Length: 446
Image (tube, rainbow, N blue to C red; front, side):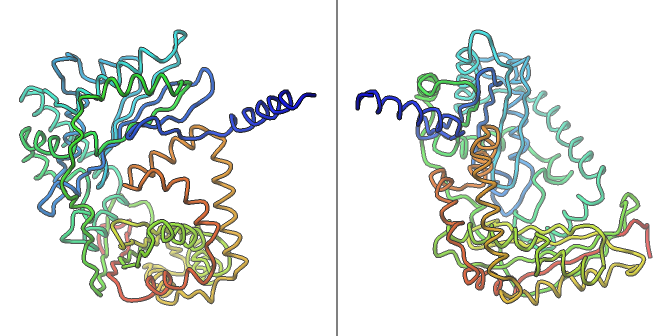
């Protein structure tokens, strides 16, 4: 075999091997593609890095969520139909968090290919970035739809209501402690002009991401997206209120909630702490390993402490450690109460608090940390071969406000995490912070 033929064969093998790896491709400064198999449906998402915590004046009034509705049902001179009618055979929806607003569409695979759908959807959202049009009566009707959604969410689940109160007590004077959709009173007071002002402030090309997955050629996506977005306002956005950390003051608050809709007795513990971030990505990797370690069933975990040893619950506890603002993290622990041995749930609640107060690196072995580290890396490696998972991972990363280039640097940071790296994190969790704990009981009163 000649040298040239050998090199061609090796290149073919390399192409086949790497072709199986689902990888995000940056098409332009704000557009990404995750290439999927032939025949896969086309999915599109536009992420706006602004949510209810960016509404200003320290309040989540539900304005960002209201605007999400108006963008989807409103019209432009270019488009006389709402998104739901403009894409009649697509699955269309949106969601709003405290820090992001996301619009998504899923179209079936077309025999003629994705060009027509891509042109349609990019032109649609390019127009939405410029402006949106909706009559006052339709805006008022949509406000009532949001109000109905609020009542349904709040009235359908006692646990949601309970955690909403915990978050508000944890951060009473900060929008990150408030509910994205707002309250009945704030929703009723929302105006179309306020929505337009929020739109002008945040809906700029420099503050949005477009992520596409499907059987799409990168060159085609580049051509269509650049043509559609060439006139979109690239201007800078103002400082984001959601990036201002909430105060962390040493205090403790107890909530006892009796709800007739509660189906079980639940104990929950939330703590707000500061964790120094000399390198944000390194800290995220360390926090990711620690969160998995605490939530595992390994020695030193919460499950071992309250389920296996204290036997205060028979279900695996829920534990989450999440970055909510620069150098600000929220720890959440929750577990069902075993009422046979702990009728009012106070033993379990005390055990949750004691677990946090006594956290130390000594309770976790190097072998456990290595096991978690390998698990995370193996999960990442497996996901790298599944386009849908790569797509969801990228969406989650961007909607949290992280830099896109860091998503591929994260595995190396995870691989470097050692037990000693967890010491300052555990010290922060066990040290002073804002604590709110509570018990949700399925009774009307006691």
